[in-house]
Image (spheres, rainbow, N blue to C red):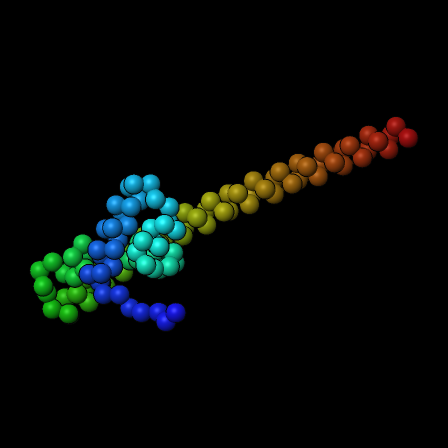
Length: 120
């Protein structure tokens, strides 16, 4: 199956249809099948910042659209950087907790071995 590009308007209408199906309790597999796209394409579309009409609301020039996309990408980049720093902090905290638990387990195991050696 050869991939094809979908126009923005088509993506917007299919996403609206997908939202309706999701509200009815359909699974992602059922939604993507109803839209006629793969699950990965459906996920990519959900992540895309698209206006409801699929293009600029005022009918601006392509240059204005490019500027708007630049601002959206800057905001998205800042959001991702913030999320990335939060996740790094979370991972660091979890690793420190893991290390302390491993040390505690090692100490308990060593104490248990010393007690078993004394009883022999």
